Length: 257
Image 1 (cartoon, rainbow, N blue to C red):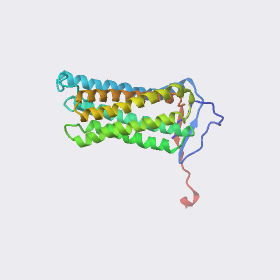
Image 2: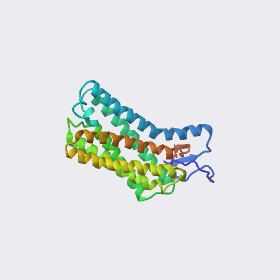
Image 3: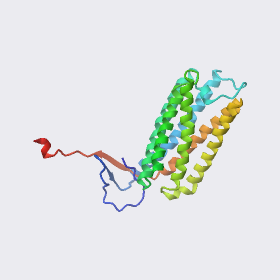
């Protein structure tokens, strides 16, 4: 599958065939622009949905007194480990996992179509896939049930996810469109740097017994991750309208005999 960038092309309207999949380039019409902005809205949907979702879980945990703010500020996982918000927390993580994986795949294909088919782009696909799976593991294995699996999901989501976004910083300056480098690059560097500081601060504070401060770092870290996903809308708005169909394979005369 190819995602085409909204730039002038000299092609005759057809792209090279790969396997049995063909994709036809069409001129951008008014309806095509709506499709392009639909792709751009995908990262925004993830960021908004994830933010509203986890803060809803926090609100439910506080309202039914499964967490006590007078004792300590809770971790996100602590808010989502008790019923009934644990069910909501699992579904939020599952949906975010699917949306994140979708974004990772689209971004990988976009960078490759911009003639930046490097090992770094392939590595980003692998790390993004692993991080997306970690989000699902994190949400479905609560810390009060299976702590080991929960910590594994947290490691994959946070640490591997951070590595993925640092690779995206590199790809921002390697792949077009260049118009977004002026602000998308610095924004990614700023958010990734902040995430790196928060990850280490959270780990140190948790191990030294400052759980409330560590939990605040975790909430800030997740908000920064959602911001990093939202930045993808800048690149995704350049994805042009495309059509995809399966090419019928002609049977050879030898196989019919």
